[in-house]
Length: 424
Image 1 (cartoon, rainbow, N blue to C red):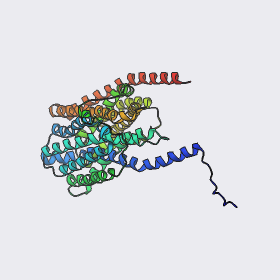
Image 2: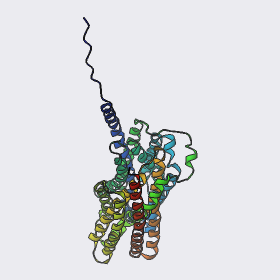
Image 3: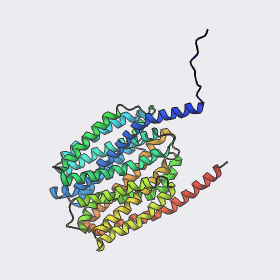
């Protein structure tokens, strides 16, 4: 008498495949959240000094030009880091690049906490820019590596929303520290230093998502390597990207000074909250428009720049602080719509080996647009006053945004024509 064989129910191939996808997705979830938090924390640290600029100006007798130099020292160093290390994680792996950059970021926070004048502040921002530039493209590329096959757009959405949400969180946290914490110019940076050290430790336990290969040293030569499909999208959306990041740079560096000019009696925290308004509106817009066609989002966002700048300027002509905050909110909507649409257009159908370099190119354009106009605005403020500089800046960004519309419309027509011919 044979012993009964255990009953075995064969699994259908589709069921096995579905379970494999679920297992793979669960393995991705925690690292995905970690890398998103890294991206958000990096940008939180970048915006944390904004509410403190008024304190630095009063304590160290700094002028508007010096403040924009402090702001732009970070952005320009970040650009150089993106140009040299943007593709490094494609060669060495995401993990070693991120761990090294996060430890460097923690050191920059310690230096910021110990700053006693403009010189140390600029040096700290230079170190921070180098660390952020190295980490940003690596973290963003890791998010693309970890994308859920069933939700491929989530990685591009996270790459868009994490930076603006991080900037909003950084400004809000620093503003609250200015209001309630002892020694706010020290406490906020100590908290961030601890956070970056903890993230560096956590990243060491993650699985490497890239496929390291030779050529890391050669990749350090300054270059922008963008595949043709991404290049066309970046060129189409580029003028709009320049406009909204230039507007963001103005609010980040000179927003507190603008608040003081419009409402001299406003509390110090009001200066930082104007940039929080912009970044919070941007984050909400990215989430709201996540299912909107990217060309439509970028075009609508470019159009929103015009009323945003007009409303901001009305604050200088009697409308007061509510107009400045309303303009910041509209600028945030424009920022979120354009950046979300442009990034989705640029990242569509990228091969794995092109991800970090393409993200680096996008951030190079973004931070160049944020830093150079801000320096020009600081110089103009020094020579002609903030009122005149704000008018010139607003007109220039509005014209750039309007100029972006024809290129976006042409790109949209090409995409629709290509999709029509691809149909069976």
